[in-house]
Length: 358
Length: 242
Image (cartoon, rainbow over all chains, first blue to last red; front, side):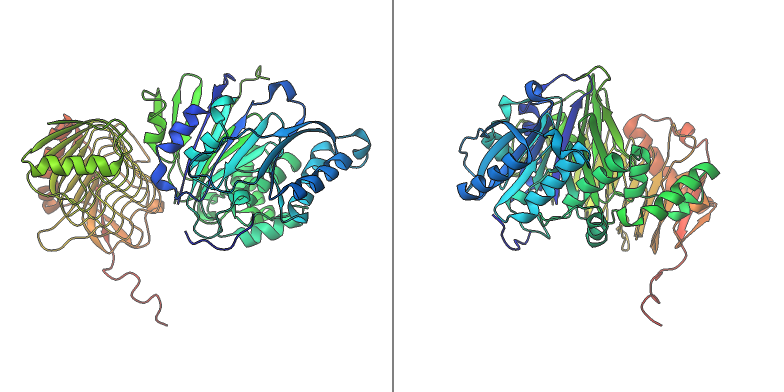
């Protein structure tokens, strides 16, 4: 599955129904297809939240295997590490433009209580994902969250969406990505979204601080094995927001820090916080151009780098929040939005599920 | 002549436009445009294209004399390396508009994004003009080498323009209606008060601009302007010389 350097911008689109209305995958596929020319067929993918309501308390592992041997070995590992409640092939249908897909299988897992004597459940699952991705060259975790899943591969995103039959899934959050790899290989595990637990990231741009971010993340037990810079963003959100319990506003301040000259202009209290965040989390700073969409169990976050080197447009219509690389990608599914705007550099756009949504 | 652009790929749409112009049409109205790139790219001649819908990136790139009117917002890279003609947008636009622009006019009713007029340039009578009615993002006039940019900030009391205005600017002139916070200026620009010659330059342009959108010219002129010019024509000439 791993391959070497294919020389090669990107498209992202995402949406959330804040009232928790679940919509099928046709809208997000139509939106990302509108930006076909931003991709080159070397990667497409989607993250969907709210798709497994009948199993919402189990970890849904989407796996990619090179062959059935790798599958067998991984299943032995799963039996040891989890209670496997159900496993099944991820339904696909062969679509023009999708070649040599890996074996795609999903598992609904529970963590046995005896594993949790010294570690929290989610830390345990995170460690398991790291172990799986680093121990085999032929088995990769595409996603590992609850009531969510990643559907990705090599191809144009609209073809990948049809391949995975996304019209059959209903989700309250969708994100999508069309890839145009420039620095790293186009392979199935390297397609976006990159995920860990409930986090998913689709990214247009490149993280030139990848080396620093990677070494920093490795100190906290993350292993970066997927050969693409975006992976680091998913793990940074997990580290900052889940493990260090930093509120979103400050996590964003670490990843897309205000410049020192702007920190000098802040009110004293705010200046203290911003200075502390930059000092403590200097190694989490994401340098380089990016526009990203982060999905998580309760919502969606859109973020640009500090000087907006990649495009992003947002729109609202009734209960829906849309974000995409181009306005046309929103208008193709929401022709008459209530509000359209361009987010400012380094300022997050936040969509959150209403409290009552399960 | 009307063209329905619904679900058309950009190549197909642009070929249809070129064919229509070659067969003698001088007025084209494109309906249901959504995201198609390069509309008006490289076109010249006395042609007027009206676009209903949101055109894709690089609208009017390398354009050499056509007029484009967009009755919606537009995206990134408008007037990329445009040489002549006029583009009128009845909405807001994205980033890097007027990239390397070297002639013609780009009039925007609403807000403009980041890096407007980056690398814009002029030569003799080829002087590109960008006027925007709303606010602008950071890096307005970055590396600007020539031409005229005017930002009005209508309906906005402060923060008309973003940070790093005119960073790397070494030619041309920027006029911003109202005050500009000196901390937002790039190191390579000086803020001046416009004089009589400046007014002679911008009044006809602003009259033309107001006419396009039905803005009240007197209201536009009711506030003063800040003029920004480069401090040097070679700001980085010494950069690699020690």
